[in-house]
Image 1 (cartoon, rainbow, N blue to C red):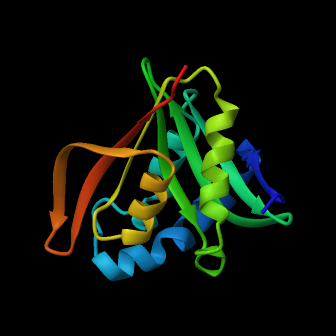
Image 2: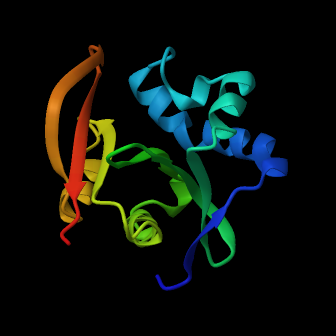
Length: 158
């Protein structure tokens, strides 16, 4: 797993990043049928506004030099926000996501807290985040009868 890297996505790669996002979230869209909020259904214009936001860093997750996924990290006043984090289906359940998240946290050594949201029904996601020290907090948001969004946070010890 040592050949996992996070590489900033360049502006000229924005269209490619949008296409990969659709691919990365397609199975989740098919499973939960969340056509209103899924990153797989996001229009390019909305994606580009988000992508170009100066407080957001977008990264490719590379494994052996190949794109295995991507993540966005937003800098907020009092915390870092992990957003749109996906690993492509062919790279899942191999430790890629875990290693990528550890690398991401190390890229921002001054951050004292990390937050993210995930799908309650996605037990592998929950297992990953809790294994890395994230704890559930806040309200649950029911998207539809198949899907509920939950929040996680992790306070970094100083």
